[in-house]
Amino acid sequence: MPGETLSRQSRLKKPPHFRAVMSRGKRRNGAFLTIYCLSEAGADVARASRLGVIVGKKVFRDAHDRVRAKRLLREIFRKNRRNFKYPSSLIFRFISKPKSLQYKEIESECLSLMKRCELVV
Image (cartoon, rainbow, N blue to C red; front, side, top):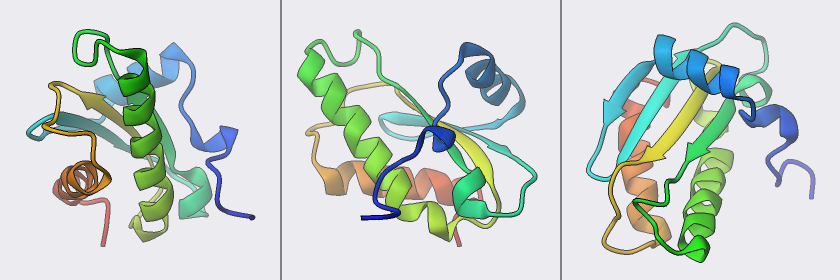
């Protein structure tokens, strides 16, 4: 299905890109997530917005929990990037382990952080 995947152009992959967003972007802390957001110039909001995810071994010991956390964050970003006011680069970083890795819990935290960064309508 077109538009159902997160393309390579929509992901932050290289360390210099992560450093740029983390050093020049806004940072907002939540209960168990931190978001770094950096506004970017561009025409198409959905295409120009990019995502990076940081999930450390100190927060999630088991590899399957780290993979699930990354997958949930990518899915939340993919479903909500059409609601962004302007193109931006985002980095989500887990700072502590949530009570459970349930979609609704992580989605509510992500959306509240994106609203605090003034990204979503």
